[in-house]
Image (cartoon, rainbow, N blue to C red):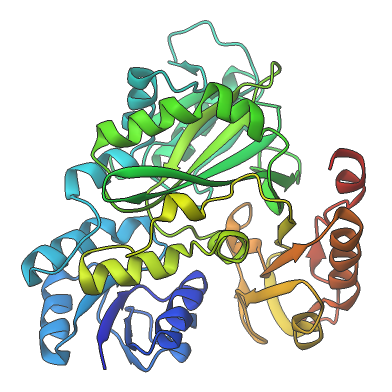
Length: 414
């Protein structure tokens, strides 16, 4: 039996572990947190820190692993690359490319170089049109981000962003009010393949807290505009960056003219786990691609371009209910939801007794539900039934759920 070492054990890594086991592979998962959520799903759990390169190499050699995988944590990519180099095992990229992809400022320079529409930036010395958004150049999961309506808020937000930046740098960008979209590509032997696109809907908590996603709808309403104005430039950029294999997603906004403006990449398995939808509609499963590459050096023996159907007929959704911060007493309804027609996966982030912290971050997502439907009526019915069944209570028996997605949006726009 082949063995893989998986670095990182957050909840979003569970689907990767399950996929590897389904493929008949022995999984060793390591994380310095002994209680990390994903460990319970692995064949073997270890406590080596996923950034401890020496410890990871020793662990891999001792267990005679056949390949190394990284989960969804961006911060682990440099260590993953070095571990693969020392073990002489396949790695889907190089350290310098990872550095470009995790730095928001570097990436936007590349967008401009290849003509990919992107978002306007400011410096503190510019005459700024408010509102703007301030973010660290090298953080993820919505950490360190603030929206600013005036100069005083801007100066405070810069200080806040710097607390989350290892490089001590930040970006000031135009605050986009248009619809959010995400585009998805896989790379096979240097060929970038457009595989999907969704519209990202958010809950707006108010104040200076960043909006949090509560629903993703596939395929995007803007897919035609994207194909006309962005797709080829994005493919040229992917080739120019030297991305040969793996998957990449791009966060974007639609401007007032319907042009899709790309602003941030994720060169890794996506924590949003869109692969659970795209694998159902196309057969292209990013998890499988990374596992294949780790063991064989190739993502697939199939011609993935022939499988890609970004403008698929199915109406699909990733529903991400949000909760208040605090300690969870109990979660109800997950088993019933798993049995609903069209629900292809239920991926919880927490269990009874866990504490939700990180106000204004993706830590407020209680669970991710993946749905594939034949039409919008079916999708609306499934989402409403999930909300009816799902219950999350705190220690005082109070409802913790917030930010419900309005299914009238589907009725009106799709």
